[in-house]
Length: 131
Image (cartoon, rainbow, N blue to C red):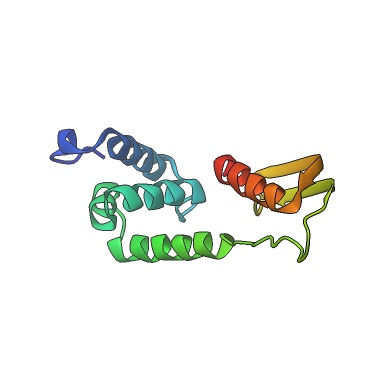
Protein backbone atom coordinates (compact mmCIF):
# COMPACT_ATOMS: atom_id res chain seq x y z
CA UNK A 1 0.00 0.00 0.00
CA UNK A 2 2.04 2.90 -1.27
CA UNK A 3 0.39 6.16 -0.35
CA UNK A 4 1.21 9.71 -1.27
CA UNK A 5 3.55 11.28 1.22
CA UNK A 6 4.98 7.94 2.28
CA UNK A 7 8.46 9.42 2.40
CA UNK A 8 7.27 11.70 5.22
CA UNK A 9 6.19 8.75 7.40
CA UNK A 10 8.40 7.73 10.32
CA UNK A 11 10.31 4.53 9.44
CA UNK A 12 8.41 2.34 11.93
CA UNK A 13 5.06 3.52 10.58
CA UNK A 14 6.20 2.91 6.99
CA UNK A 15 7.25 -0.65 7.91
CA UNK A 16 3.91 -1.20 9.67
CA UNK A 17 2.15 0.09 6.57
CA UNK A 18 4.02 -2.53 4.52
CA UNK A 19 3.04 -5.29 6.98
CA UNK A 20 -0.64 -4.32 6.83
CA UNK A 21 -0.50 -4.16 3.02
CA UNK A 22 1.10 -7.62 2.86
CA UNK A 23 -1.54 -9.02 5.25
CA UNK A 24 -4.33 -7.55 3.13
CA UNK A 25 -2.88 -9.14 -0.02
CA UNK A 26 -2.31 -12.57 1.51
CA UNK A 27 -4.92 -12.91 4.27
CA UNK A 28 -6.98 -16.01 4.68
CA UNK A 29 -8.96 -14.73 7.65
CA UNK A 30 -11.05 -11.59 7.59
CA UNK A 31 -10.04 -10.27 11.03
CA UNK A 32 -6.84 -8.37 11.63
CA UNK A 33 -4.38 -10.53 13.61
CA UNK A 34 -3.66 -9.57 17.22
CA UNK A 35 0.01 -8.98 16.34
CA UNK A 36 -0.92 -6.28 13.81
CA UNK A 37 -3.44 -4.69 16.17
CA UNK A 38 -0.79 -4.59 18.88
CA UNK A 39 1.63 -2.90 16.49
CA UNK A 40 -1.02 -0.35 15.48
CA UNK A 41 -1.89 0.35 19.13
CA UNK A 42 1.77 0.88 20.01
CA UNK A 43 2.35 3.21 17.07
CA UNK A 44 -0.90 5.04 17.83
CA UNK A 45 0.38 5.71 21.33
CA UNK A 46 3.60 7.17 19.93
CA UNK A 47 2.35 9.00 16.84
CA UNK A 48 -1.35 9.55 17.47
CA UNK A 49 -4.33 7.36 16.65
CA UNK A 50 -5.57 9.42 13.72
CA UNK A 51 -2.22 9.56 11.89
CA UNK A 52 -1.55 5.87 12.51
CA UNK A 53 -5.04 4.77 11.46
CA UNK A 54 -4.85 6.83 8.27
CA UNK A 55 -1.45 5.36 7.32
CA UNK A 56 -2.51 1.79 8.09
CA UNK A 57 -5.97 1.97 6.56
CA UNK A 58 -7.77 1.50 9.88
CA UNK A 59 -10.79 3.16 11.44
CA UNK A 60 -9.36 5.80 13.80
CA UNK A 61 -12.23 5.45 16.29
CA UNK A 62 -11.70 1.68 16.52
CA UNK A 63 -7.97 2.16 17.00
CA UNK A 64 -8.58 4.78 19.70
CA UNK A 65 -10.96 2.44 21.53
CA UNK A 66 -8.44 -0.40 21.40
CA UNK A 67 -5.70 1.91 22.67
CA UNK A 68 -7.92 3.01 25.59
CA UNK A 69 -8.72 -0.59 26.49
CA UNK A 70 -5.02 -1.47 26.37
CA UNK A 71 -4.20 1.48 28.62
CA UNK A 72 -6.87 0.43 31.14
CA UNK A 73 -5.51 -3.14 31.18
CA UNK A 74 -1.98 -1.87 31.82
CA UNK A 75 -3.24 0.36 34.65
CA UNK A 76 -5.14 -2.51 36.24
CA UNK A 77 -1.99 -4.65 36.27
CA UNK A 78 0.05 -2.03 38.12
CA UNK A 79 -0.13 -2.27 41.88
CA UNK A 80 1.79 -1.17 44.92
CA UNK A 81 2.36 -3.10 48.12
CA UNK A 82 3.80 -1.23 51.07
CA UNK A 83 5.94 -3.24 53.46
CA UNK A 84 5.83 -1.79 56.94
CA UNK A 85 8.47 -2.69 59.49
CA UNK A 86 7.19 -4.29 62.70
CA UNK A 87 6.55 -2.02 65.65
CA UNK A 88 9.16 -1.92 68.35
CA UNK A 89 12.88 -2.49 68.01
CA UNK A 90 14.02 -3.79 64.64
CA UNK A 91 15.32 -7.33 64.78
CA UNK A 92 17.91 -8.80 62.52
CA UNK A 93 16.94 -12.15 61.13
CA UNK A 94 16.74 -14.38 58.07
CA UNK A 95 14.40 -12.97 55.45
CA UNK A 96 13.16 -14.21 52.08
CA UNK A 97 11.12 -11.97 49.78
CA UNK A 98 9.66 -13.03 46.43
CA UNK A 99 8.20 -10.47 44.06
CA UNK A 100 6.36 -11.36 40.88
CA UNK A 101 4.97 -9.05 38.21
CA UNK A 102 1.77 -10.42 36.63
CA UNK A 103 3.27 -12.84 34.11
CA UNK A 104 6.44 -10.81 33.88
CA UNK A 105 9.66 -10.56 35.85
CA UNK A 106 10.32 -12.30 39.15
CA UNK A 107 12.69 -11.27 41.93
CA UNK A 108 13.75 -13.41 44.88
CA UNK A 109 15.84 -12.02 47.75
CA UNK A 110 17.28 -14.09 50.59
CA UNK A 111 19.13 -12.20 53.32
CA UNK A 112 20.49 -12.85 56.77
CA UNK A 113 21.28 -10.35 59.47
CA UNK A 114 19.55 -7.33 57.96
CA UNK A 115 16.79 -5.15 59.44
CA UNK A 116 13.28 -5.32 57.98
CA UNK A 117 13.25 -1.64 57.00
CA UNK A 118 16.48 -2.11 55.05
CA UNK A 119 14.97 -5.08 53.20
CA UNK A 120 11.88 -3.08 52.23
CA UNK A 121 14.02 -0.27 50.81
CA UNK A 122 16.29 -2.73 48.98
CA UNK A 123 13.35 -4.65 47.50
CA UNK A 124 11.66 -1.46 46.28
CA UNK A 125 14.88 -0.26 44.64
CA UNK A 126 15.66 -3.58 42.94
CA UNK A 127 12.10 -4.12 41.77
CA UNK A 128 11.91 -0.68 40.18
CA UNK A 129 15.06 -1.48 38.17
CA UNK A 130 13.85 -4.97 37.13
CA UNK A 131 10.53 -3.72 35.77
